[in-house]
View (cartoon, rainbow, N blue to C red):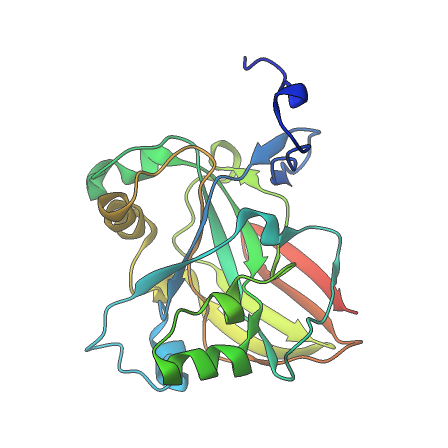
Length: 234
């Protein structure tokens, strides 16, 4: 067990470690990095103007402190076109480098549900200029998430409806079995680019139907067999 942090060694008090709750317990899962896979459902790739048969999925990052769990999403400044993207979270419990696909699932601790909130107008401007996407993706509170559920309780889901309603109207509907890159392949690929460690989170992609929200909207979504998420835009 690690010793308590000696804050007297710092010139300022360091921020706390971002965490996610573990469902049904008082335990917390510390977050190291958040990797997001883009265009991992064919229909979503098409709706965003890309050909999933030509372009393999790619990864970008959100910041760990972008995660929120309080049930509200503060509409961000500097944007007039903020979109929802409902995704399954994959929580890594054991790290590694160049992890084989065959053993990748041994590294998964559990699963959850998250929203990859996106300032689509700012992301679009960045795309046109050939710049990174952080301004559109990695802003404060851009990752509302559910509690995590251990794989020891639910197994490793490969099928299950991925859905989102806005104000009671179904907007997104897909299935985990529609993912272009499956969870073991994502883990194996990522571990060839980065050193994965316990505490990493992978947001596994979103089905078609992404769209804009406004203040007052209620977003209800989930992944069957994993969990649900209920977030109000404020």
